[in-house]
Length: 356
Image (cartoon, rainbow, N blue to C red; front, side, top):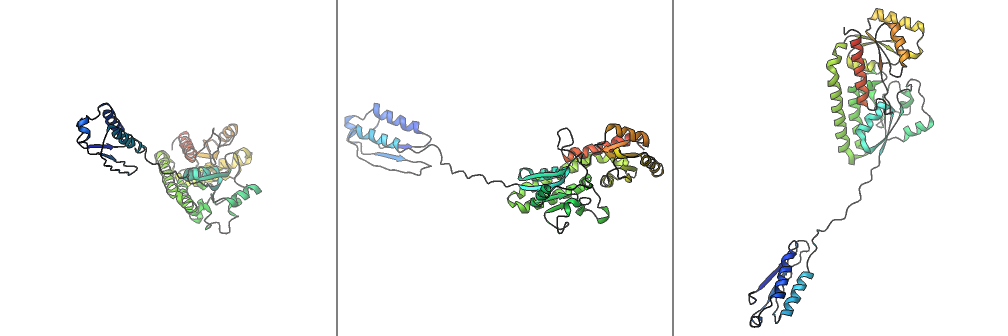
């Protein structure tokens, strides 16, 4: 080694092996006696991008011992290879908004829009009767505590009566607020276009309650709207032949479904199919003869034996419509599944009627 020359040792955080090699070389190749006096100094610089330490030491060397001491000092000053990690902030706690839906289909809409930011409950699903329903005190308390209430509106006085202004109260999302007065009928969630509007309004209400989650709510509502558009597009062509046709309604009022598809609905009776008397069946046959109905609609929870009996008595296809859906894994557990089932049932009934 040429020891009289100035030795510059630079320690970089990512190159400590180089510093080790220099130290080893100094130990096993000490300067000759004649060179020790000529050695004027050793520059030691520690440049650390993380610690921002710069040390320049100039010393007169008299012997190998001092060289070794400086090298050891150099290594001891080395910086930490790992960058400083800023302290992690605790995640912001999510306080869910309580959303109460009067029926299961609207509960699924609330879940689709609110996601993990809402706690959804509902009162009615398949197998239960909307007309004449009376909530318990616990259910009423839950309604009053809820941040948002979703209701079909018409035919659901059991929920809307608890609001001083049931149409303008920002706590309630009513489906019948999206249609003219003369079109306010029960079961409005059977019209997917109305449900699409309700989902957007629900997102707006949730944005007010949880503004820090506004982007999530709006994105979820937009995605749900696209699903509705896909649902409508998938069945528009198949159901177009039903437009202008006449269909008989038994039990529930399926006017919202009829308006969406475009057929005319004649309500034969409000009594469910399982409770029809012989006289009511004869009256229904007369209605079919005069009105030209091509099929009859009954609720999907009608027992198969009753459904076959009614179909034999009426002489036209009887189609089961699911108006409420269910939380059971064996049934229509989402709004999309519910409406796809109903549209498929209508198409099947039209085919069985002869397709005319």
